[in-house]
Length: 153
Image (cartoon, rainbow, N blue to C red):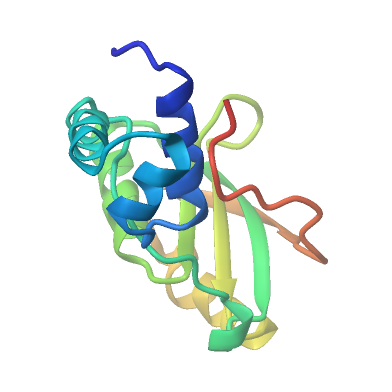
């Protein structure tokens, strides 16, 4: 792990805010030459601190107005069933995030769909057909109070 200095932190903050910022503008904002900045960003990428670049998409604008947190309980914890569950979740477009956690539920999913009817189809045709799934509890997201899209440090 590399030691981050104040310039590195500023670079990361600015790139998280707008990954399309030009090298020249970013170098100017942090007080570096463009070549020095390029080397610094490249080092952050190679160290795995910057994993990728991307756009933040508004799901509601795409017609995905229903969001839920789903607490999934497994029937079996044998490795084959868990691998099968994870592979299925990774390929499911409705599942935006999946976390293996401690506590009562084995997995927590953040699911987005157009509406409640589409979510019900997701449950019946996908989630409840996975052999390892015993049950699922749905918490419908009423509104996002805080949706932090960047890492603060």
